[in-house]
Length: 350
Image (cartoon, rainbow, N blue to C red; front, side):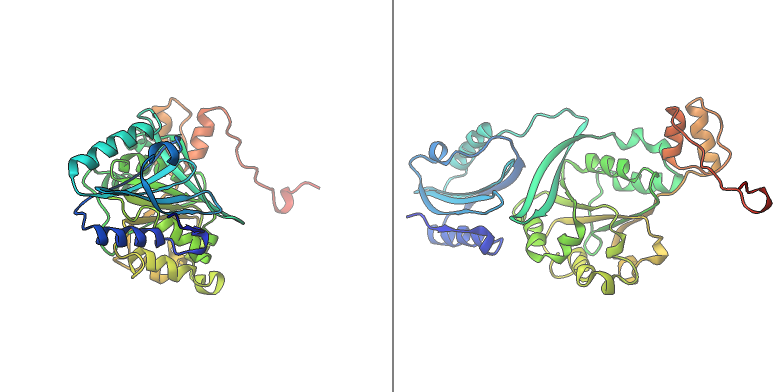
């Protein structure tokens, strides 16, 4: 008999609890779980014809979560517009593998070229959280190194090394720098270098992510059964981690710290990358203390010599001062407009 309930009124892990309750009843010992993006919707009537539906839920924001059984297997599927989370328990590994092969054939990952990355974009609406996946062109880090100062190159070399993984107590990445220094391109390169072991989630409304606990938990727990890490990206979120963050943003700072290395983050494969224009000295001491950040990176202008080298390699007029990367590319593309400096004193015209 089907049981109807609204996931928006239940805990995010409610269906997971039902799954494990049923597993305990059956005594199944073989398990499988995975999640992936797919544009092919799950058709229950066709794919689970002849199965018994134990429980089904439909959330207002489009997530369908259902639990099916047959004598030798139990399957839980949670699916949104373009995302699938699959849990299976069964008697025989071979039977599970056959089911997974057939299921994946019906719901393949989108075909992308090797230069693209998949990024999930999250935002909160009046009907609940929404997730949509986009496929973006992304460069290899090795093709970008000349665009950054030597300290940035060394840090990104470390983070993009194939053997690098987040360590316990250091799951926060903090990148500071003014607009136009190439932080976003560096993020794309980082995502690409991590894509074999981590997915990327871009939160478009960081303030609501931390102020709405249900929204936050929806994102954090959506891949709790996966072996993949999740990189949560919060761009231009300096107000959340400023010295006066507790006064300005309430519980946002506390919740961020709890995700990074507190009780909430225990057992979750989650890294949080925050970019900010604020100087590191202006950030809250709890954020920048030793051991909390896996990466503290200042992405600034290229030095005078680095800018000269960049111009020389691009056959441009040699720069004579520290320069933003955006200005160098504007110069290369014929779009650079020198800043207008207002005259002062007796040279000021009326």
